[in-house]
Length: 203
Image (spheres, one colour):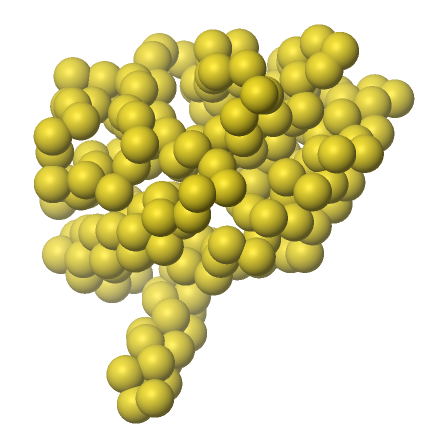
């Protein structure tokens, strides 16, 4: 059974990605951030032979494997209809046999170390979660044995309660928690990211 890493991603088109961030920094800069962060994430994680990197792309009509931003992925699948929970559950239900880890595409600090830790945790837990500062999570994974769990029922998305509600839905399943990370959703977050970018360029 193969380990599958699934990145939930949107086609990086102006006005359709990071709209909350765009209210602070403008649509052009918000889109630029997303394109840079997504390309680096796929390039960084897609090259690791320890897992198969799958892009769950949206909109479905644009989820084509030959799109330039998807070149470093092993496979591309459409996210399908429904809210975020519906779409992530579809990934867990339909991915190839083996443990599955899902991540978002706008968290610049995700590294191979985090993905390695998530799959390692699934060796002794039914599920794994990477909590985010805003009350949600940047990673969620399942061993999918002895069955696929369904943790998204009734979760209130974009509420700040996603983490607690999803954990409650796991019931008595063993869930491992990784370190807390931040996404880039505000002008302040973006300023921190740009500062880190400057430091990286100087090294």
